[in-house]
Image 1 (cartoon, rainbow, N blue to C red):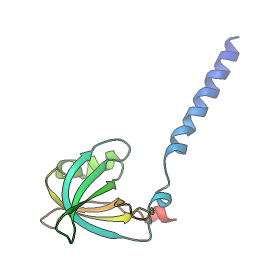
Image 2 (cartoon, one colour):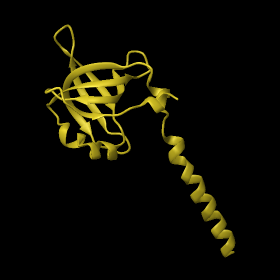
Image 3 (tube, rainbow, N blue to C red):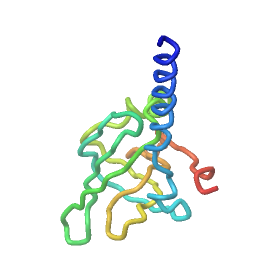
Length: 132
């Protein structure tokens, strides 16, 4: 009986182990890693969530209004280690270089580089491996 319980526990643990890998998306499925774009705007919100922080900007448009943009950033631990967590504050203006979302008309992307108002890069990541 004890062997049977151990067997079912092992099967349960092994089935859950792959769930995280299955749930995680492929970068190239959601974002066009062959294209790069850039916008500058004011940070309206930052969600420091795991695994990928979410960054929201209001980007001025040609009509004098603002358009909301949504960006997915690198893994939270990487953002912490590079100091981007301290640099990226609501109300600050940043330029975001990014790979755009594949879905037409969606103002979104995955961050490649964050540049502050002084022109300093506060965060950069290479996604070249994601396109392989």
